Length: 375
Image (tube, rainbow, N blue to C red; front, side, top):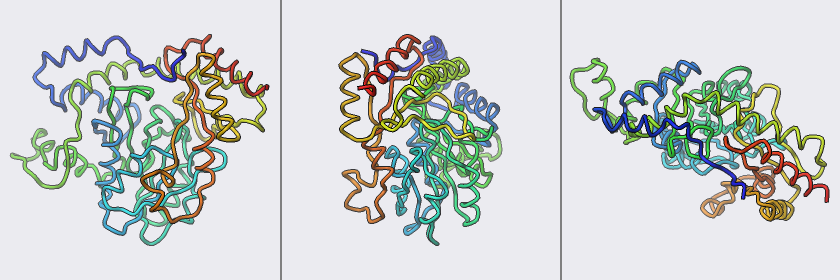
């Protein structure tokens, strides 16, 4: 069976974790954490980076930094992982779910604009499959209304929008380093702060509501409890594992994009696109090889495709159940039908894509997709 995913290891993870064992700092914010922060800040120009124990934690920090009050509204896509919405719900905000576009699972300024009210405080955007939303249009809309924008960049390491790195455009951003992502620390994430007004408080939230980071820099002669917060920072073992992956980022990215191109070259023009839609990469976006997906015509057809691939030794998976129609939220949802979200929920299927997938295996997968849609 060709699996859907296989986590990547560079071979240096254990070496660096052993170094942590012999160091003076295991609990977090040691040398490997600082090296990871510097890597992202220098390579991508992010204003401030803070590693977290998960992408969910990074999103929760984003929500806390937005200083939400009961009655404040947050616009989020319905076609996303639950963490995008849950982070804001935990801060007592009112969720306003936006539909995807007909062309891709992303949201657009056009889908967001009708949902804005005087109570809208935040817009959260998700760059699905590492493919950018049209951020200029979204930021222009948000700035016109004084709204904070949060990028859920969980899929988006090393992807760009008009040459700018995703996660570096909005006021705040969150990355995931879960084992299913391009680079991983097993479980992990990162908060990115691009707006100066959030920098100091982000460190306080990260350090359990204390100003310990300022103390370590010699800015204050003692530290104490000065705000809310939690234990968001990961151990040095997580950071050491992540550092081993960051050292190989270019190699990882080149390999994943190569596999993505094998799929796209084999399928585009070879399958009937009235029966199945292939990924759209707008001219303003550069793909990062995170995911290759197909959109079938119906739930039944997707189910048949996945079973056909399984029968031929290929594990393919669907993705999100739209949040507004989930078991938890459907009785609470009072908005309009989100027809595009529903279509992606029923019809989208993801093909295997991971570093060790060989060219022959990728070609084998693509050939069986073509055979299915030729019937």
